[in-house]
Image 1: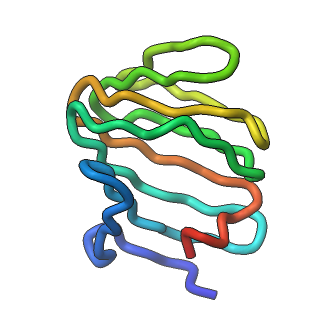
Image 2: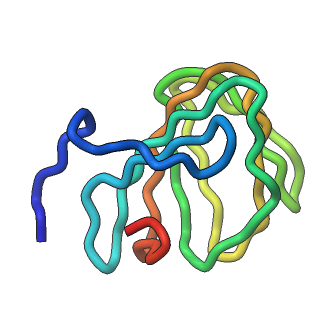
Length: 108
Protein backbone atom coordinates (compact mmCIF):
# COMPACT_ATOMS: atom_id res chain seq x y z
CA UNK A 1 0.00 0.00 0.00
CA UNK A 2 1.22 3.48 -0.84
CA UNK A 3 0.76 5.86 2.12
CA UNK A 4 1.58 8.98 0.11
CA UNK A 5 0.39 10.30 -3.25
CA UNK A 6 1.26 13.75 -4.55
CA UNK A 7 -1.36 15.44 -6.73
CA UNK A 8 1.22 16.91 -9.11
CA UNK A 9 2.73 13.45 -9.71
CA UNK A 10 -0.53 11.83 -10.85
CA UNK A 11 -1.64 12.07 -14.47
CA UNK A 12 -5.30 13.11 -14.78
CA UNK A 13 -7.70 10.62 -16.37
CA UNK A 14 -10.20 12.12 -18.82
CA UNK A 15 -13.55 10.64 -17.82
CA UNK A 16 -15.84 12.70 -20.06
CA UNK A 17 -15.49 15.89 -22.05
CA UNK A 18 -14.26 18.50 -19.54
CA UNK A 19 -14.14 16.03 -16.59
CA UNK A 20 -10.75 14.91 -15.25
CA UNK A 21 -10.00 12.65 -12.27
CA UNK A 22 -6.90 11.95 -10.23
CA UNK A 23 -7.19 9.01 -7.84
CA UNK A 24 -5.21 9.77 -4.71
CA UNK A 25 -4.76 7.50 -1.67
CA UNK A 26 -7.08 4.53 -1.15
CA UNK A 27 -7.50 1.18 0.51
CA UNK A 28 -10.38 -1.28 0.26
CA UNK A 29 -12.65 0.85 2.43
CA UNK A 30 -11.91 4.47 1.40
CA UNK A 31 -10.82 6.30 -1.72
CA UNK A 32 -9.82 9.95 -2.12
CA UNK A 33 -10.17 11.53 -5.58
CA UNK A 34 -9.47 14.99 -7.00
CA UNK A 35 -11.62 16.24 -9.90
CA UNK A 36 -11.24 19.13 -12.32
CA UNK A 37 -14.53 19.99 -14.03
CA UNK A 38 -14.61 22.52 -16.85
CA UNK A 39 -17.39 25.08 -17.24
CA UNK A 40 -20.39 23.82 -19.26
CA UNK A 41 -19.39 20.16 -18.94
CA UNK A 42 -21.98 17.68 -17.70
CA UNK A 43 -22.02 14.57 -15.55
CA UNK A 44 -24.96 12.44 -16.66
CA UNK A 45 -27.39 11.09 -14.08
CA UNK A 46 -25.84 7.94 -12.61
CA UNK A 47 -25.60 5.87 -9.45
CA UNK A 48 -23.04 3.61 -7.80
CA UNK A 49 -22.94 1.39 -4.74
CA UNK A 50 -20.29 3.52 -3.03
CA UNK A 51 -21.25 6.33 -0.66
CA UNK A 52 -19.78 9.65 -1.86
CA UNK A 53 -18.95 12.77 0.14
CA UNK A 54 -17.31 15.80 -1.45
CA UNK A 55 -15.89 19.26 -0.87
CA UNK A 56 -15.75 22.13 -3.39
CA UNK A 57 -12.28 23.70 -3.46
CA UNK A 58 -13.29 26.28 -6.07
CA UNK A 59 -15.98 26.90 -8.65
CA UNK A 60 -19.70 26.26 -8.84
CA UNK A 61 -21.86 23.38 -10.03
CA UNK A 62 -25.50 22.31 -9.99
CA UNK A 63 -26.27 18.78 -8.84
CA UNK A 64 -29.32 17.03 -10.23
CA UNK A 65 -30.65 14.27 -7.95
CA UNK A 66 -33.69 12.09 -7.62
CA UNK A 67 -34.64 14.18 -4.55
CA UNK A 68 -34.19 17.64 -6.12
CA UNK A 69 -31.48 19.90 -7.48
CA UNK A 70 -29.01 22.03 -5.54
CA UNK A 71 -26.05 24.30 -6.23
CA UNK A 72 -22.66 23.94 -4.53
CA UNK A 73 -19.77 26.39 -4.62
CA UNK A 74 -16.42 27.04 -2.97
CA UNK A 75 -16.44 25.90 0.66
CA UNK A 76 -19.56 23.70 0.35
CA UNK A 77 -19.73 19.96 1.00
CA UNK A 78 -22.20 17.37 -0.25
CA UNK A 79 -23.07 13.71 0.20
CA UNK A 80 -24.73 10.99 -1.88
CA UNK A 81 -25.87 7.72 -0.35
CA UNK A 82 -25.26 4.34 -1.91
CA UNK A 83 -27.21 4.01 -5.20
CA UNK A 84 -28.59 7.56 -4.99
CA UNK A 85 -29.01 8.89 -8.54
CA UNK A 86 -27.07 12.10 -9.19
CA UNK A 87 -25.53 14.12 -12.01
CA UNK A 88 -24.26 17.66 -12.48
CA UNK A 89 -23.96 20.67 -14.72
CA UNK A 90 -20.73 22.59 -14.24
CA UNK A 91 -21.48 26.32 -13.98
CA UNK A 92 -17.87 27.54 -13.55
CA UNK A 93 -14.47 25.87 -13.80
CA UNK A 94 -14.61 23.74 -10.65
CA UNK A 95 -12.25 21.70 -8.49
CA UNK A 96 -13.55 19.16 -5.96
CA UNK A 97 -12.33 16.42 -3.65
CA UNK A 98 -14.51 13.31 -3.33
CA UNK A 99 -14.26 10.42 -0.89
CA UNK A 100 -15.85 7.08 -1.74
CA UNK A 101 -16.72 4.26 0.67
CA UNK A 102 -15.94 1.54 -0.14
CA UNK A 103 -13.28 2.28 -2.77
CA UNK A 104 -14.44 2.32 -6.38
CA UNK A 105 -12.80 -0.54 -8.23
CA UNK A 106 -13.27 1.33 -11.54
CA UNK A 107 -11.14 4.26 -10.25
CA UNK A 108 -8.12 2.23 -9.10
